[in-house]
Length: 366
DNA sequence: ACTCTGCCTCAAGACGCG
DNA sequence: GTAATTGAGGCAGAGT
DNA sequence: CGCGTCC
Image (cartoon, rainbow, N blue to C red; front, side, top):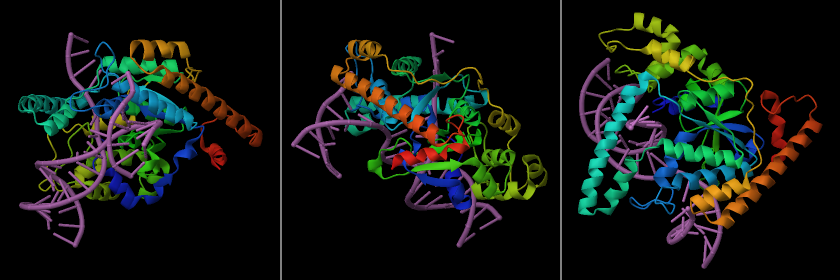
């Protein structure tokens, strides 16, 4: 569930760490995206009516492919270079949380059965969405699709969000795009929300800058992590009676979780038994991620023949749509490499295309 | 008043045609 | 072989 | 914009 109430807390207490940006201003940028989260959304919404989904001839769902295909084209056309990061094994501490979600899905499955019996359309719609889960098959389909499109895929050893943040910290990508606030807790230096929202919705991209946020909150990164744990995260319960406001006050006042625990009134605030805040802290601070320095992220040319085989022959896509999309990708690639070339001639000091010294990329938008 | 809880709810893509 | 999200906002009620 | 379609 991310971090409870963090958006509002930052809006109230660190407004300068959040900036509205235009979608177009990310031209040429490398952006890390949590793939499983995207796939989940596609499965819920793409081409669904009741329990019916988009399928191939064999009756297998293709909603995730349709969604992933068009979204990725949209990003590439905007000159954005997406990296999709796939989940590995969740950490043990998250197991209890996952168990809860699992039982909720079981409930929904029962509700769905009842609704289907009675024939209540609205309920069928509602409950069937709640039974959605991302299977390894969905993940493999999408990996295959992305590789054929020439888009890099990263397999995280554990949490995708943590791996995204690590890519960002290592300056292999400019920012992490997600709706999940714990990207910041994992230490992503820049974090984008609403990047994928259509411009028709009038919601601007919101860019969070962690160093600015820390400066405004007057906290160190370690203190920020403690703040997030106190607000409530996926890894451990929060303390009853402590919400975002109180958490911020306590961290500012005492400086660290240890000091807070020593000083607060334990009558008033019941600390849960075996409260694993240290473990949670470790998962945020040193999550299990890969950092293979040698592996360069590469955006290759699309494999047209492979795409036609996979999408048209195996999954029933319209062939015109696929060939047109391949053209779009090629054009987009040319444009963005041209853009980079011009940029290099304008700014000889720039050594790579990631990092703080690259804001001049914005000149392309006008 | 302010804050937090604990419920509840919902919505979640992208495109093109008219 | 298996399992796998997440906000956000509303509103009543209680504790400080 | 609203609405149907994508597979």
